[in-house]
Image 1 (cartoon, rainbow, N blue to C red):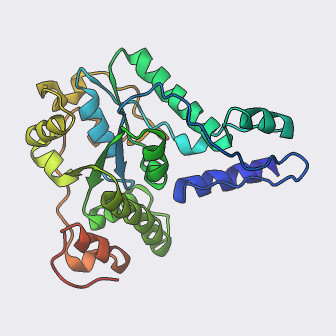
Image 2 (cartoon, one colour):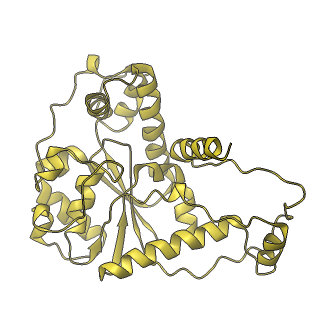
Length: 283
């Protein structure tokens, strides 16, 4: 049963940001009154919010090539949680105004502060696509966080996903990608940040990275375009994109944008909202 629960929680956190917690009336403490957030060790982190297959590994590699920015591989914070497993522990924490959500926030903050400290750089950039489902929580934990909304033509996202995973059913794939894109769109309307379009990033990498540096109040560095000359850890499955394109060390041309007929109906509304389709056809 624990393995089943872990699998369910992993799937839920990746698609909704929620997780299952077993209720036990013997050990469950009362809700904590007067929650007191802990002092954060991480300051002004940068979170890239995007759908899968949007070029987030490319963007994190380019940003991580800046001398002031540390952009590690995907960290999957939604799969990490701290838990008080007894009523005694819950009650003890409550006396300090701490519940399990805040305990988890402290774990995330300490982890990110630790990996940033090991890098020797001052600013952390995090790019796990599943974090789009945790966007509001990230903003709550780090009120000084900055957000980069990475957009790509939803039809191209679909084509890229299908090319990488041809065995996945069409309907399930569309539903899966639409959840990501919908959350990106929602976050754009509620959180402060800057839009970056994948197509412009690969076509005009210097101009786009200069614009990003302006947003982050940093001087631009030419090594951001030639990111292969910097160390970014291993490109491997589970840590982001590991394709030949990302291993090339420089931005590669985007695939031609799909025609309307090539865009699944379930993704057309998002494509229109993001300015990729002028045609009013939608879901």
